[in-house]
Length: 184
Length: 168
Image 1 (spheres, chains in turn yellow, cyan):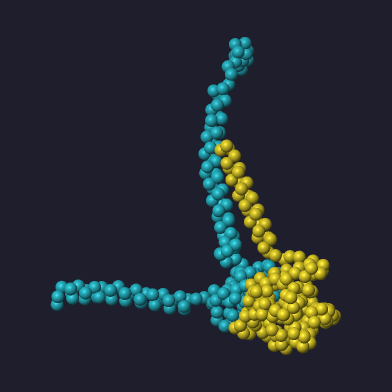
Image 2 (cartoon, rainbow over the protein chains, first blue to last red; image 1 turned 60 degrees about the vertical axis):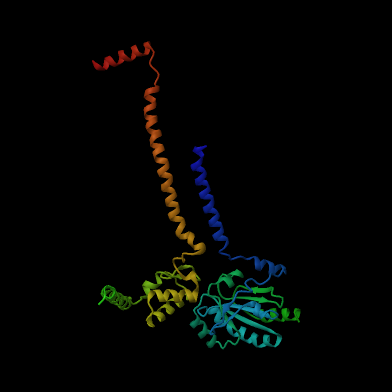
């Protein structure tokens, strides 16, 4: 019996380390399950809806729950990101239409410092609310892999469309027309 | 002066004599620490940080995000912040993932605990098994001498004859 004790301990330790590794990898979380569900039309509830994030340039905090009942276009951006700068005018133009339909763009800065983000907002004349995801936990919940990314949340708080690259053409306009028509 | 008053006076004098150099020493140490806080350098600070987007050490990372981090560090250095203040500021801005060494709490604690635990376990296993192996080896070395079967008389005679040829 004693001759099996050491191998048993070694195997247990190895199994424990493997389990730990699996746990760590699983919690890195860049899941594409949201994409698959949205593509199937099986719209998932927006992750991290209760997560309170600091509002850029203010001491206040805001979460998706505070915007419940509105259609929300979440745009994840950073000031150092060229494509984010290119799509900023598209989002600002869309915001002017959205406010008339009880909808809004919500900018989320990610991997960025607040002073650079504030400068970016000022430079591009952004009027929609912007929050800071300092820990990255909010955007990781959406499986974000970088910036820019855009998610559309309907009035029921479900992710109904997303784009993991720079907004181009009239994707946003067409998507919002469809979603606002559905939720009117 | 009563005896109690004399004792109280002596105690107060003793406290004053001990406390004054102590407080002076503390004040001097604080002043020295403040004055000696080294000015942070970009090379020194960035060696403890990561490019959070490309997940590479900041000193070798080449990306717009890494450049943005470096310019922010330069700004903080220009504002006179020390290295520890800059690191705190970077965590406040970019989260803990900006740190090269993860903070020692929560799941990250495993990073600091597992390697020493494995070393300790390895040492314990060696400490336990090495003496047993040595005992077994010694026993095995002794055992064959005792257990070699005796040659039968014919073989013994033949061996003796052959050996005698070598002895000349």
